[in-house]
Length: 486
Ligand code: NAD
Ligand code: 6OH
Image 1 (cartoon, helix red, strand yellow):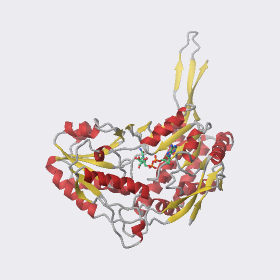
Image 2 (cartoon, rainbow, N blue to C red):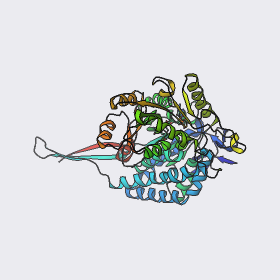
Image 3 (cartoon, rainbow, N blue to C red):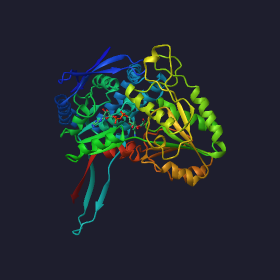
Image 4 (tube, protein in one colour):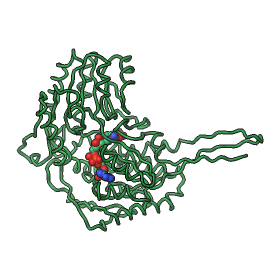
């Protein structure tokens, strides 16, 4: 049984609140950890540690030295890969494959890429004429924004947390991280690695707890937090934005999605199945970028549905303890109830259940875990809740279409705008349709293919701002223009 303390000012400490909460294994339902819950006094200590660190060694460190230190950190994370994998899969129930191939390597890369980029970025310089003929010079200066509150979700905990901490630290900020209550382990472990490479104390702090009336809300309310970067549900983003309005703190939001996949009759069907098996079922559908609406051109509709059904039925359920498992459990019993409420609603609305729709039975420890069946529906109208609302489970609804115009309209008929995936072998169509999709990220013949230099984020209710590459630097730095009259 593990105990996760808070990490404040370079040290692991008990919460002053005296409050603890339990963490359960998604794949067996057993209790696996006790977690210290931060309340007002703890949050205050963490934020003050972060504010003080800005005035100390970290604040004075030359950019090149800071970036070298973050490169060392990336290497140290890579060297501890097995420990991070164990921590992540225990908290999330993810298959080892997903943690090994995607989550933990991306955690290290998130530090490396921004450290490299920062080393080579400069600022604007404009020479200016003046009436007296002597001229002036304008220089763009960059300063860290200050203390950044990082609030992260449980679906890819280490990847999504470091995606924010990496650029924040590269730009010279300090952070207070509030990981999801469902996934406290990897953020806590990272404190050890920060200390091992000599990141000054107070630069990286971790507080645990819940959202409302707990660590999350208290962090967003703290007056010494200068900016808030958040990944999670759209409704939580709205609550955080209200808190951030007090004191006019800047926000960067990566929120929910209801992402379409569009499969044209000219698509390579093997590719279409490979891509959408991942986009629908990877991480048990708990990926913000995942597909929950599939649109298939009528001539290939039946073939696609039967092949996706076969793929879904070929998945092997199990957590990290199950050899050869290809799809894990959901994160919690609470989330399972939410997903199952949509499974029930689909039946009530008269969907055709192509496969799944229920809870699997096991004769081993998995029976206590939070599994649901991979599920595919057809036959519902476009305005039904199943087609409109983010479910965040291993499921999709498939709708046939005839024309490009029709499918573009259906794909865009959503309050979200995070990602889309288009399958076609016709390059002109890829440009034509891809350019009309109202989403921050559009993939053609792929999904979740990430170049970390590109902008990442959503439009409409899927987010505010973009992170990635120089766009991250935009949020994590404060600019000033120094105008020197010559
Ligand atoms: P969530 O909004 O429930 O929680 C996210 C974090 O916010 C947690 O740490 C939680 O404790 C905290 N929180 C909750 N209420 C708060 C409040 N009032 N004040 C401050 N903090 C609060 O989201 P989740 O269930 O952990 O994650 C799943 C959601 O995240 C899905 O909607 C998914 O689409 C979205 N997501 C988006 C992206 C993206 O990049 N766009 C990436 C991953 C996940
Ligand atoms: C959402 O569940 C996954 C998001 C991925 C990223 O934020 C990323 O940077 O790849």
